[in-house]
Amino acid sequence: MANIHILPEYLANQIAAGEVVQRPESVVKELVENAVDAGATAISVVVRDAGKQLIHVIDNGGGMSKDDLAMSVVRHATSKIKTEHDLHAIRTLGFRGEALASIAAVADVEIRTKLQPSAEDDGVSSTGWVLASRPGESPDIRPIATSVGTQILVRNLFYNVPARRKFLKSDLTEFRHVSETMQRMALSRTDVRFTFHDGDVLVFDVRPSSLLQRIRDVLGINADRALVPVSMVEDGISVSGYVGLPEIARQSRSGQFLFLNGRPITSRPLAHAILTAYEQLLSTGSHPVFVVNIEIDPNKVDVNVHPQKHEVKFDNERAAYLLIQVAVTKALREADVLPAFLGDLPLASKPLQGLATPAAGGITYVNRLTGEIVHSQTSSSPPPTFPPVRSAHGGAVAAALFTPPPKTEQAPVFQAGSQYILTPTADGVMVIDQHAAHERVIYERVMNKHATPAHAEQALLFSVKITRSPSEIVIVREYLAEFQKLGFRLDILDSTTIEIHSVPTDVQPGNEEQVLGKLIDSLQHGGTIPKERRFDHIATMFAAKQAIRRGDRLGTEEMQTLVENLLKCALPHLTPEGKPTFFLLPFDELSSRLT
Ligand code: ADP
Ligand code: MG
Image (cartoon, rainbow, N blue to C red):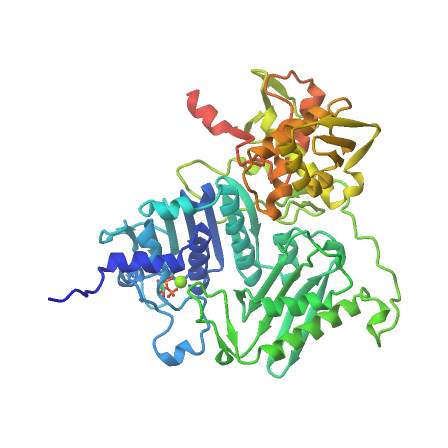
């Protein structure tokens, strides 16, 4: 009797899915790659609940025939390579034929597609097809009226794999992964239009443009001269792209993108090659912005080392390393940023100019990915029109927040129920939770001040001594650096006494002890927080403690300032803990209720 048997396909797919589909971001990546491979010139992505509830990708690419549609969700089925020979020179982003099968094993999938009509057929293939698949069931295919191209809807990711679903992080974290991938894809294909919505909120809509313009749009870089071109070719390897001047360096690696033959990759050695060019130019903890593409003969590169295809192997990594290092150094040198000690170059002929400030009266966009506020002098890009997102959940609702300049100064505000602020916008009535909104505002102020710590604290004329239990003092000692970043300069005098020398500027005189005490209390219940997240945690707690309460009566001016400050935030719609700060009651909905 044999014990070994071949796994049923459904189970095999679910196991394979573990490698390909780790989180909503993986699904977005695979679907957008497929759209690019299908020759799309416009790709729209909508996620709900960071993709946990819905990922909707629409492309205007070649589409699929009925037979191809049926095959597309079968594992190891691909139209992109046929022979081993093809595997050694991959030009498409996909090739493993695993993505759709894996996704369909862990979510409900609906694919609507229609072939691009060819010149000779006269309306014969003008039918579209829809495939509906549930994990473990055979898919159902039927005709449907749809536009040319492909739409894929992935619903309830991992609902049949509770262990995986539980493993997902908060919506904010998962959304961050999704948006990084969207940035990467948008940077890799400047000839394609990308539209990206978080629920009803437009995150970005970028039309085909130069790489320089695309980088500015996607990364929210506004300064004119802040990006310098990199370009060098040698020995069949070429390096091109842009690197940022030290002025626009960031506190994280969020502005760093590497591509190999247009494919987003991660490579520690190649990123290191770029960093070495910045040596001495950046303080520790500061990360340069770069978008660099390396072109190498695809025969000399192996992209098939990892199911997610992020990692690559090259025949001649050392040569690429050196070329990148030289190319970036040269670019920075030509931009007059590298100091003279680097050798043969002449002294900087002109000192760096102040970065251009936007003309007054421009439109202000908030780049929710980078947290930057983007001023656009021109209104050259008309409001997004393609592709209309026809979800059941209504139109581009909260886009009101990000598209027109918020004219909050003039907008009337009302307080209701002693905790909500109501204010009209172009698309509806915004209902703001005053406490949640203030938390967001304080949190971002703290995080930004942290970048320029000089303004973070106010010294006390007379220091304040407070007494806490020894176990609490241990916590304070543990978090001393984070307290300091926040603006609390503290001395631990003995096992029960702390002396406060300065406090964050937000703290009202007389409240020093109370605020610090509340923070210490909340840290006790914080469990063990990884070092790199500690400041974020403490800032979140601080914001929660300092924010105006629900029930506080507010004056008109206070409310206007709050709304204005909220709209300037990088992530206005959520508290630091990920709870909503407001919602928009669309006029559409009002009118449907009142008819
Ligand atoms: P791979 O991309 O590795 O080939 P996938 O599972 O991602 O594997 O897709 C399987 C096949 O389905 C692709 O080879 C392609 O023929 C087809 N396909 C998937 N997405 C699209 C799309 N958006 N437009 C047209 N064809 C698609
Ligand atoms: Mg694919």
